Image (cartoon, rainbow, N blue to C red; front, top):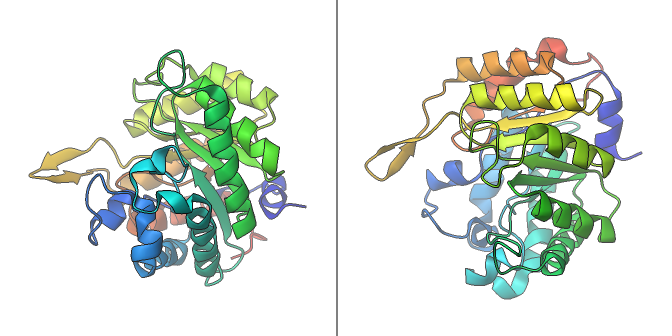
Length: 300
């Protein structure tokens, strides 16, 4: 059985990693740059961050491929190496995972960066093909699961899952970003996301990025009311950022993130981590907070 699905069969909560982009910005990644370029230019810094999350207690780390579709990488200097970039990312994450025990690797698949028709220029098939190319490369690189994340459109999320299903049988998580409280920017409601992707066979439905911890918890409550049997993936930002000069500062403390983790596990969250602004210190607090919700047989 797939390693991730096997872990879900046990009665345990798993810890996911924290932010990739905001943490890499602290060590030199320029704002607006293609994070995936660093898989070739500075793989050591990505590896160091992934190891730090594992040392902090993460059971699942994500590949540095949030913008790794051919559509989103058009402005990258490595636009002609999309498949190679995704395979490299998976291999690098596998190298990091080997430093822990039982650590799983999720292949990150973020939005393509442009709206699908009729709201934008991207055709459904074009998006599905781009996601299929990415999913194929991530699977070839050895990921344990796919994480279709920070979605805001039902149509694009469907295209992503469809593309992934064309090329791999790996379990897929579909996670939405609710940046309008408990609605996405395209108006998607949590209950619609949960029922839609539960019916389409997603392994989990998730909430990531977004606004506040309180709003993320409210989304999870709506998920639980709509699809109580579906396991939930939760990776919120460390609050809303405020600007200090050119730097975005996230004010949610590790203790507050720990309180949140305990609360959402009670609501049915099976995987808890963090998105923008979430550091290894936050992940360490999450791991400590939900240790009591973990089965003693959990591999470490």
